[in-house]
Image (cartoon, rainbow, N blue to C red; front, side):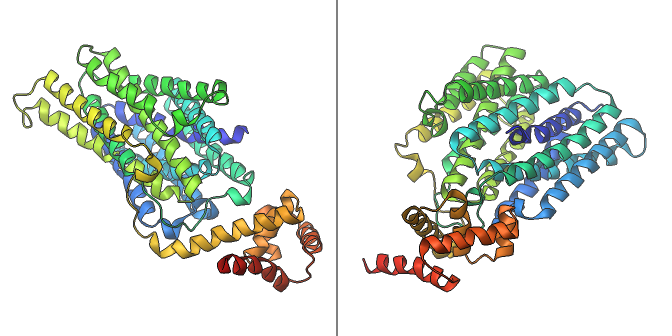
Length: 457
C-alpha cells in the first residue's frame, strides 16, 4: 500500500526545516535546532503524561488538524523570515516553534498507525518512510524560497491524506486501543538511546561537523534496513534485527574508537550512521511493543523522543569542553575515550538480558488502575474468537460479532467498519442464525456462559 509510506512526506518536511534552521545566516545553528527540539519535547511530554485521555489520537479530528495547521504556519513564517526584513528573528522563532510542535504530532500519529502492523511490515514501512523522506529532503534542500514554501505546505497535506487512507485499511481489531494494563516499560532501551543522543550531540557540535553527513548516514542506515526487509526478512530470523539491537550495538561500538583516529567527513559519517541506525531500530521496537501489549505509542514513542534532551545536553557539554569550563585538561582522545566507555557499558548492560521482554524495565505510571478493564477486554476478544471458530463465522462476521459483543450499536458499527446500515443488519442476522439466537440479550448470555464456566474451572 503506497499510502503506508505517507510518513515520508512528514519526514521530508521536518528534515528540510531542520536544514533550514541549521543553515540560516546570522543564527547560531544550535540555538535554532535546540529550540525546535524543545518545542517537540513539550508536545511529546504532554502526550505521554496525558496518554490515558488522549489515546488514540487518530480517532479524534483535532490532533491531525492542529498538526496540519501548525505545519502550514511554520512554512509561512519560514518564507517570511527568508524573504522579508520584517522582524526576521521573531518570525524565524515562530517558524521553529510551530514546526517542532507539528512535527511531534505527525510522528505520534504515524507511530499509532505503525503499531497496527505486524513486525515485518513495521520494519518495511518505517524504514522505507525514513529512506524516502530523507532522500527527498536532501534533493530539495537547495530549492528557492517560493518552491520550498509550496513543498512545505504540500508535504503535511499529503501526509495527512495518506494517514487517513492508511487507517481506513486497518482491520478494527488491529486499531490502537485506548485502554491497557500492566506492562514493563523498556527503560534500558531508553537509557541506551539517551547515551547515543548525548554522543551524537557532542560530535554534532564540533566545529568540523557538516550537517549533510547526518543526511547521508541516515539514508545509508535506512537503506540497509529497508533492503533487509525487502530481500532477507522472510528468509532469516527477523528477531535478530527486531528483538535485539545487535546491529546497532556493533555499529556504535565500532563507531567511537574509529572516530578517534579519523577526522572530518569520514568521522562525522560514522557517528551519524550509528546514531541514525540506533534511533531507527528503537523506533521499530517501540512500535512493535505497542502492537504486542496494546500500550499507546503516546507513552512508548513519546518517552523515546524525550531522549532528545540529551542531544541538547551534548551540545552544551561540547561547548563547555571546548572553552575549558568543563574538564579543562581534557583533550580529544580523553573525550572520545569517555564516550566510548559509556557506549560500551550501556551495550553490555542491554545485551546481557537473556529475556529482554521481561527485564526491560518497571511498570509505568498509571497502569494498575486500568488492569481489570484491560483483562476483561482481552477475555471478551478471546471468547468471541472461540465462538467464531466454533460456529464458522466469516471474517467480516467476526468483526461485526466482536463489536456487537462490545455493546456497539448498528450505527456505530456502520461507521467503524465503513459499511452500509443494511449490510450491518444482514451480517447480524447471519450471526444470530449461526449461533441459534434471536436477541442481543441471548448473544450476551452466549458469551457470558463460557466466562462463568471458565471461572468455575
